[in-house]
Length: 367
Image (cartoon, rainbow, N blue to C red; front, side, top):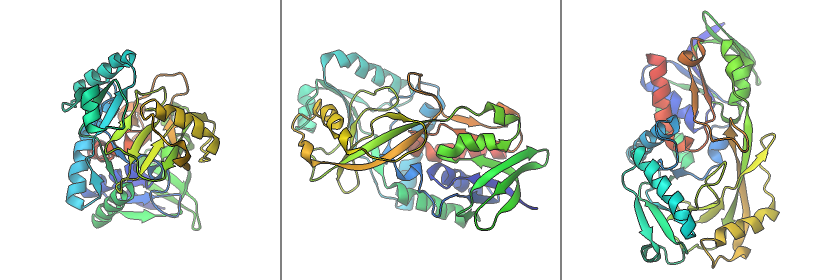
């Protein structure tokens, strides 16, 4: 049986960030990916937003890794020539009764180390975004957007320059952890059994199922997988905004918001719809709900320009009505199994936090 030092399962942005950090630290790394190309899962179906770190409970992994990751990500994009823009965003309170919620976001953000926020009144909002109708807003200059595919391409290139290898079409079907490492069963056109000193489960939507399929004491500690679909609608023509526009967050997500791509094209979403299994169907009938939500802060919206876009699925580890969960990075200190790290519930701000997550995982492996 062939033995490798580290196997990273999943070639999305988080898996590639882990592989890049581990390879740079001198580890022998093999990345195994079920699909025929890297970055084709949830990493290809998000808003491509670089989050500042406004929403997450102080002291949580989400808060710490988002703020660290945001700073690292901007620097990395500059160094590697990855397309991005620090465009800023406005979190809006449409009514006076929402101002307290806006202030609570600002207070939490400051506790997380986000120190560049400004609370704006109606006249200041109108000067920045004349088409926006809001009673008050929170300006976050550190929020931005990034070419997620370009980022993943750069991370894969860095990993491979340090000796990492990528095996596509290689689904992990099971495994077992023993005293000599973790034995993985890998399918595909050339099925094989492989032993690794370390296994990093960065399988996104499949992370929980994989955590249960790798037989060990850690299997019983895997959370229950829950899935929340988020639909996006694109906007034909140019929207009259230069910044991202977010409402007050809603349970399970951040509300139907406006994001811009690097070409200035607008899209709206995602909403929150709890589903039993990952499903990327976009129901055009949802456009009415979108239009109603958007008009709460953009009354002049031409709903006829909203077109079905795409859907993403959040890899939740809590269900509807439950408090949002933190990232779970379960290593030997959590489950007692040597050589095994599970990344559970890596939803937003996973893209922003990806480099920080990779460094955190590398630290656990090299400690």
